Image (cartoon, rainbow, N blue to C red; front, side, top):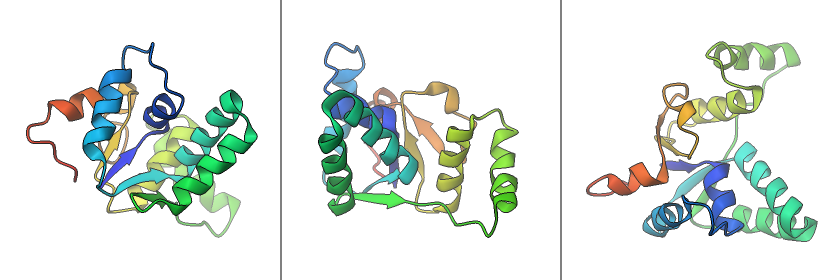
Length: 149
């Protein structure tokens, strides 16, 4: 399953058409339409925050509910630690790679959900730092044929 990064979804939902990546972003999402896609709970909450900031709280909440109800999106969650110490220990291996805490949480979710096979993001600095392959939407479009994993 392809997991969508919040940056890809923010670009889509806020229609940043002046962004040079917008066209590739939209084409990649169009090609993925109809297939199951993942989004981590952290990515979804990032998206809700961005939409709320730009379009208001109601829009953010409505978007959140829409993703929860979507038949094309699966919200991926981390395993729940027994204690704060266990949580810190579980993310420490990702932090040791140089990931931020937020990116470490995302990596942990990707690592504990075996159906996650590819992470779609414009953040090229995450390649080789996450437990799954990363592509930008532009790289995904260059795959022939497009594999939706």
